[in-house]
Length: 500
Image 1: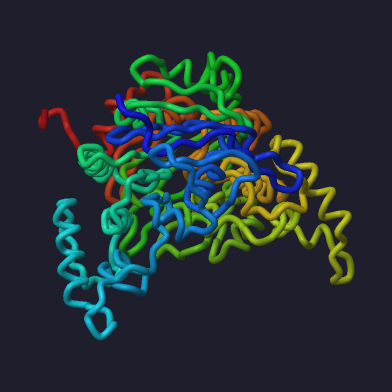
Image 2: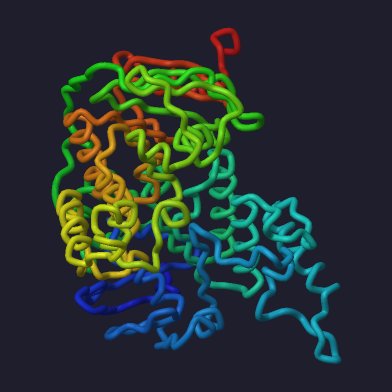
């Protein structure tokens, strides 16, 4: 085999109070996918920013085809043929598909003007290579997430990228869209691209990767061929210990009914939703993309209003017209999109945690920083938050630690019911285990937990009871005992015995 297209040797990068990378190595080969594996905070995001010229390393070397290179800016990396496709596509919603593909390197006429006709033709040809049925004149905001990823890949092809970094590209895709992305990756491999694939999903890694590299705490742990490693061994290398139990052992102590919902409906999102919830119970909600689970949870929390329906807490009618009403009733909601809906990334950790509790940390209209810090410290310690300090800006934390902050801010409100919408989406296996353990502790303390999840193992491993939604309606309700993945999939997809 020929040598690597791109190599990193001894890369180090530090920030105040944090050694993000400590002498790591990485090799990427033409026509192969290398999976970069590690917990949140392991250094994956930092190495991507080094590769794309956003960060400059404090030490170490980068070589392409054996020749040293230096990326002083993102443009240098792009000129060298390195491009990244992120979980949240870095494109411009108000530009057309063609404009996004050729932004910064559009074809020009002899007069120096942008040749829009050629740009559209070239964009159409690139999209055709990807079997993407997208009009180059479409404004990007009118596309779904999967098609935005296709545009990002077309942009990578437009600059003839030799190295393509794919950072959690399937996080918000349906199963069908994920399979289509796999086919695209196979095509990129056939074209000789060197691909760095970052994912927390082991089924994806084993399906798509040829090689693996494992980071832990900013250090290189191991690298090798996927054919020579097991999932169990990868997990042990990631977390530095054996993971004998993925989910915590629980002996549920389910108490009396605390919540009953009846006939909750919305004109376009869900219809006739009804169920009960008990103290100490973890009630799982499962369904395919578009089933209406998150939309219902947002209505239950008062973000949107149902057209009809009744909510009773401890048997008493509860009118929830806003999130403030929900919080007063003892209901809190940790949303799926923690960055957009759950936290303020530009603010420090302690202010994010204390934000809903300002009535407890202020006197006569003046905030008391010491009380804010004390409140934040209490829940940061309880959740084992990993951060340089509580003054650190939230956006600098890993995804798992950001999720802990969002959970912590609502626990500070001392709720009776907590809704966790995709609580482990986009976080690593170690952080998942921490969130699962904490969920079990909350239930053991008598808190009622509603967990929305698209991951069948999580639903089966954590739920005491499961409700399956399909097309905005409840398709089934199941006790934990005897529940199988096949039963969940059948209910979610509307497959009956007669359809076999």
